[in-house]
Amino acid sequence: MRLLRRSMKGMPERYRYMKHYDELRRAVAVMLVLLEDATPWMEETEKAKRATTVAKKMLANVR
Image (cartoon, rainbow, N blue to C red; front, top):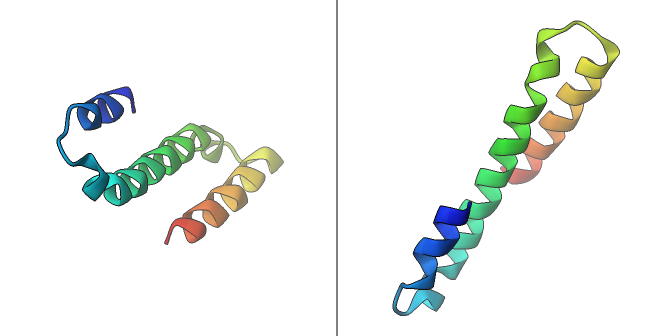
């Protein structure tokens, strides 16, 4: 995320690309959260079921 932000700082006319930057930043953030939540999926517990439900809702909101 830091590298992405630094790459935009030196860019001329960056205002033209801010929409794409924001969309990419959101997608990367969602991906990181989903990867962090993937660990409980390996276990068959109630916590795993909740994590799966939350991740599905987040993914549906991104699409």
